Image (cartoon, rainbow, N blue to C red):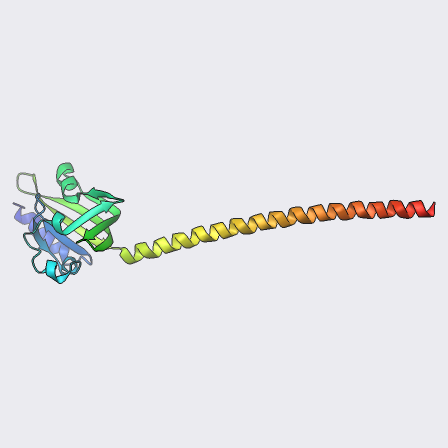
Length: 179
């Protein structure tokens, strides 16, 4: 059981949070959450969030590998944070989060729960991906233009050399006529 002092601290903090949060026990059973967390789910799931296991409702992944925030937090006994972690809600909805999980201790200093804060960065991640794609495309176009400039410079140099040879031949021919 989470200590009363810890619960009071959590209740004080959650009023200032602008992100979704959920409080779970070490077995991932949802104990408490805010309206933003509730809003992540379709209504059919959101109606009965309390007492359900978090890992059955929201699966975290890095790449294709599953990540268990609660287990990591309980095992380490320290906070865990991921900057861009994918959260799968059901089978069709995917969001990107900045996820932080903090262990909450009981009076015996054993992990009695985990406080998880989720910042939805799905839109920011999409914008960042588009920006990176644009940068890569610009770099490719710049490389292509640089190659074209180098080719044009080489061609111009070759033409200048041919023109110089032709001028020299003309001068030599002109000298041959005057002699």
